[in-house]
Image 1: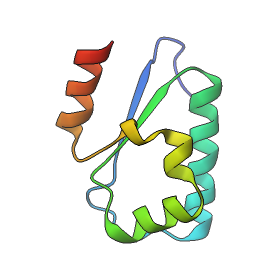
Image 2: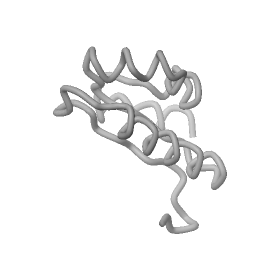
Image 3: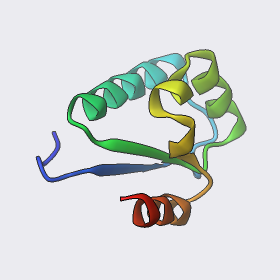
Image 4: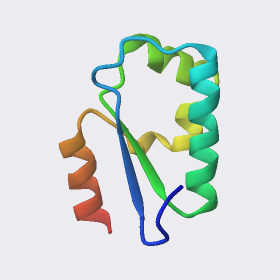
Length: 83
């Protein structure tokens, strides 16, 4: 699924208005895969409904609050400044 050289994965949620529980469970699996491979996942621009579901399922904690950012630019800046 991922190249061994990938260190960061940015997911842009800015155009996603809603997500259901099956989508959230698939996303949880993606979080697990990234963690197992040492890949830092960023979630950008998450809207109100997906964010509420992420919090309910503790996906925000699994990703890490510092990796829940407003934009792709914020994720890239974080990567530049911290790695």
